[in-house]
Image 1: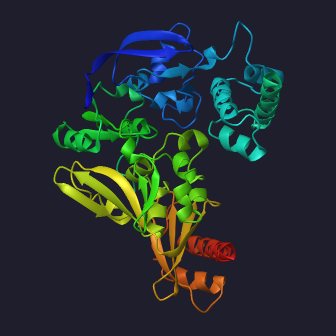
Image 2: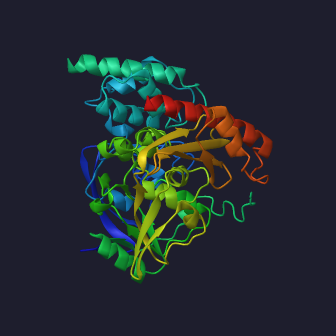
Image 3: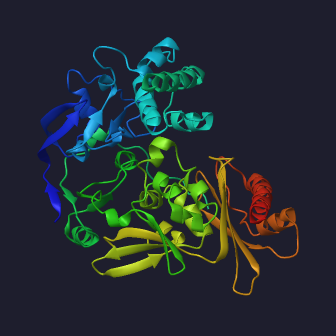
Amino acid sequence: MAERLGPRFDLSFTLNGASVSVSTTTATALADLLRERRDGRGTRLACERAVCGACTVLVDDVPRASCAVFAFEVEGSTVRTVEGMAEDGELSPVQAAFADNAAFQCGFCTAGMIVLTEALLARDPDPEEAAIRDWISSNICRCTGYSLILEAVRDAARRKRETAE
Amino acid sequence: MYEVAQAGLIAASYRDIPPFPVIAPASVEEAVAAMADAEAPVPYAGGTDLCGAVREGKKIGTLIWLKRLDELRGVRVADGTLSIGALTTHAGGAGADAAGAIPGLAEALSKLGKMRIRLSGTAGGNLMARHTRYEMSILLTALGGTAHFASAEGEADLTAADIWERAEPPRSLLTRLSIPLAGDLRLDYDRSLRPLMTQALARWTDISGRPQGRAVIATEYLRPFALDLELAGTDAKGIAAAAYEALPADFADPASGNDWLRRAGAAILARQLARLEAARG
């Protein structure tokens, strides 16, 4: 049977492992919903039309541009943002690889790049160079020329494999 | 052929969208009913384009959210036809075993957009966005396929050219793309000059065993244009040069002149013909 939502509704989902329940509207973008939370400013907004990927988050493990995801779409879903990558106060292997390889300049794209890299390595722990370039070209970096980001992704893959062994 | 856009960016942010009712149908029948009954219905699937479209003037009366319609996902082959469900993501299509029924199709689908887009963007959304730079219209034209629409008034099968003319039934829902599997149908899609131009080439044999071909050229600003090829009796460069004689003199846009499109298009077409010939072994 068809489900219906009015303009304002109650939304429940899991955000970085914690249950969240909020009242919101159907026109609210997930990016805005996340950024309105005090702990949600890691998700950046730039183009606001799903092109640049600065706002990339994982919705049920799929990388999505959260500026182009209506909040109602995540009802019952699991959402991970850059704030949910660290564990026990320790940077994740991907975050650490980005930091150690200086894979950012202004840093505005970094959160989206880290989330995108997490999605890639979850699907392919040992990606070939072509796959890395294919995935990372999903998001736009205006500063680095991508070389340092690509090196960070390679390093992150190595770190995650070593952690798993 | 180039038409100056009549509207540009009219909203600085998606935050100008007023809240709207959402209907999430559980079946195609419910979706068709919702399209018929709802106020100003807008189908919504992968979500990669709607925010941009709204900023360019699209109005949402009621959002018809298609997420629950699993029957519209997947690639299938039956009765000599390959069908791509309208909700099939580009990544899903590229990874589908059934896509192998048309050599080159999976590779073409794997080139659409970037991975983040391919994981969410759908075949139906790509076609119905009606962006000249989007590929599904080009591929469907090359492969001789049609798009199937369902509405409360009935069903209809339309070509990509029909869709550019907005000929689909009012308040209808795109359900699938259908491609008849002509003999040894193969596809080559070349994006090496994107965004200036892309070109799809389909090659098949007719019932008398004669090779047939169709090339489709499109640019950032121009709708796809099909060139029928005469494949028998000459080399790839000759075939390509002959085909491009049929390109209209006004097929040009602010980025690409007609002469350049003819030269580049013919050069790429010759390479595509050689690739398909080599692939056939």
